[in-house]
Image (cartoon, rainbow, N blue to C red; front, top):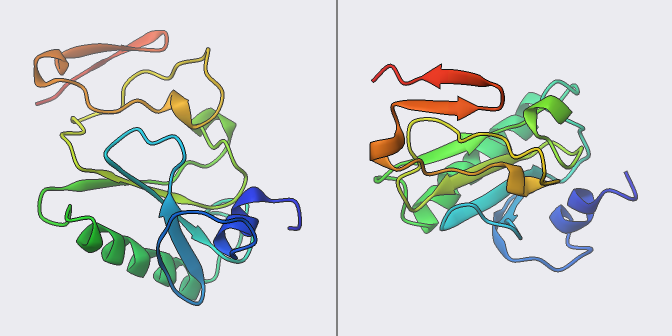
Length: 147
């Protein structure tokens, strides 16, 4: 897709901070990070989301980059989170398949509430302090912590 920002970033048409890449995908730093490590893993070919007929070899290439990123960033042992949003209700801000690789701090056990007053990637706020993990207000409903 010629006007897709992620297509341009993944294929080197727009400069970005590339962490790793292979023939089918590219991993680069998120411009609005929500964690010390916040890297996007993006296929070089355009796919709107995970259910857009993505070839298995493309998904495998993306997973291989996740592995490379977490080792390069030194979060392979401490822990990390991989998130793939699909559709507006899930918070997908760019209609190009991508994985968020997050780590480098305690991310907590759950995602924090969606901020409806913010557009784009800032709606995803992570890292609930341990003392606040009991009961959290999520939008208009409450989610109880099982642990």
